[in-house]
Length: 153
Image (cartoon, rainbow, N blue to C red; front, side, top):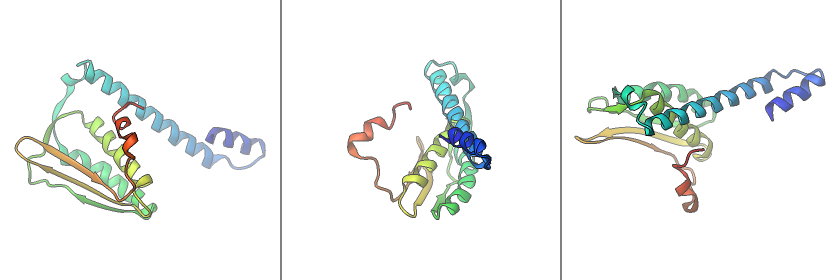
């Protein structure tokens, strides 16, 4: 739709730059989604797991969270972050997939987390598990839709 709007504005001699920027953002999001699906398929086929590394989980999620603080401000949302660095937050995984997961969670929370959204991101761990908790005050996923959450696309 953004491209169609841009073309219509160009035909009318109007400034199409905002629509073109929106189209670029949408294309970038589609590319990121495609790349994530490809990485997940490779992991499921055991092709990519050989490139997994021991990662500082809290360290990986700091950058995306920092990036979303400005977006939260723009939306009038409140973002609360509690990263427990003193705990052993190491995981074996793919940092780009973890970053993409967090970006998806934060995007959803900004758009569906209430008006204004209050978003909480917290990490914790015990001897066997590392936990990332993302919460908001939105309506949540309707019970009949919850089985779809883990489906691709």
